[in-house]
Amino acid sequence: MKVIEHLELAKNPLFSYEIVPPPRGRSVQDIIDIVETLSPVSPAWIDVTSHSSSAYYNEKEDGSIERKIFKKRPGTIGICGIIQNRFRIDTVVHMLCLGFTKEETEDALLELNFLGIHNVLALRGDGPNYKKEISKNRTTNYYASDLVEQIKDINQGKFLDEIEGGSKFDFCVGVAAYPEKHFEAPNLKLDLFNLKKKVDAGADYVVTQMFFDNNHYFEFVRQARAAGITVPIIPGIKILKNATQLTSIPKNFYIDFPDELVETVTKDPKNVGEIGKRWADNQVKGLLEGGAPCIHFYIMNDTNNVVDIVKKYQK
Ligand code: FAD
Image 1 (cartoon, rainbow, N blue to C red):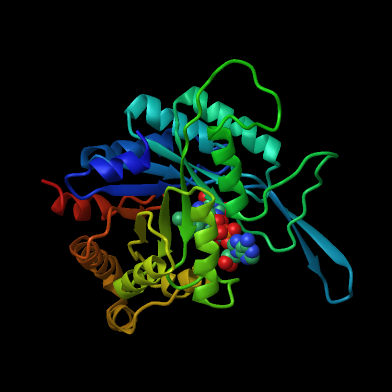
Image 2: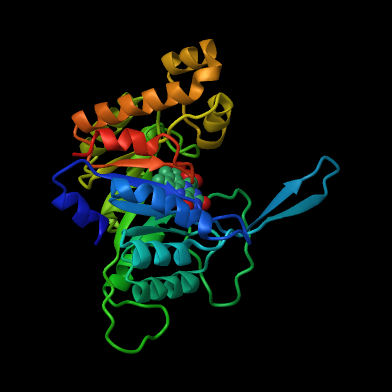
C-alpha cells in the first residue's frame, strides 16, 4: 500500500521507522532481527536509507588536491524487497540525485515495480564538491524536485530509454523538509519556497528532519500551509541515547537542542537513556495531540526504547 493511502485510511496513530542498510559485507540478518523486533508494534511502513559512493576533493594547505572516496553502502532495494515480501510490511525506498544518473534511477524504478514497492522518498543527498564521471549523453538529477519530476514522468509512461510492454507505474513520492531550515538555505522562507517546488513537481507527502522541540514542527507546518503546501507533513523524531549526541547531532543535522533537555542530561548524564526515552514519549504525545498524521522514528537500527514508547499509543 502507498504511504498516502496509509495516511488516508488511518483510524489509529501511525508509526513508521527509518533503518540503514548494514555496512558493506555484513549479513542482512541484523536487519531481519530489527524488523522482527518492530513487527509486534505493526509498523505502518519502514524507510530504508540510501548511500551513494562519493568523491570529495579536499584542497590541502600546500595547494594540492586530495581525492577521498567514500564507498557506497549497498542494499536499499534488496532490503526493502525482503521486508515487503517476507514480513508484508510496506517499505519506502530512499533514492538520491547525487551519485546516480537518471538512467540508473529509471532502472531502479523498474526494479522496484518488479518487487511491488511503490513508495519512494526522493532526496538530493549530500556531498560538497561531489563529482562523478558521467559518460556521454547521460544526465543526473540535481535537486530533489528534479528527481520527483522524473518519477512522476515515469508514472505517466515517460521514460528515458524505450521500454516494452504495458507495465503500470504508480509511485507515491515523499520528500524531505527541515523545520529548523536546510543548512544551505539562506533562510526558512526560501527553503519553504524550494519545498513547494518539490510538492508542485508532484510530491505526495513530506517527512521532516528530526527535531527535539515540537514547537519547531508546529511553526513549520503553519508556515508551510501559509506558503500553499497542502500535502501531509510527517514529523521525524529521534530518541536520544547518549550524551555525546548533544554535540554530534547538531553538528551532523544542523538542529538545536532545547535548553531543558540539555540541562537535564548535563545534571544526570548517567541516566541519559531514560531521559531520552521520556523526552521522546512527551514529543509523541504532543505531536499526536496536535494532529500529526504519523510519527516517523529515526531508529537507525537501534530498537531500544522505541517499542515501549509506541506500545503506549496503540490499542
Ligand atoms: P533538496 O530539496 O534538493 O534541497 C537541497 C537544498 O537546495 C536546500 O537548501 C534547498 O532550499 C535548496 N534548493 C532546492 N531546490 C532548489 C532550487 N530549485 N533552486 C535553488 N535551491 C534549491 N541523505 C542520504 O544520503 N541518504 C538518505 O537516505 C537520506 N534520507 C533522508 C531522509 C530524511 C527524512 C531527511 C530529512 C534527510 C535525508 N537525507 C538522506 C539527507 C539529505 O539528502 C540532505 O539533507 C540533503 O542535503 C538535502 O536533501 P533534499 O532532498 O532535502 O534536497
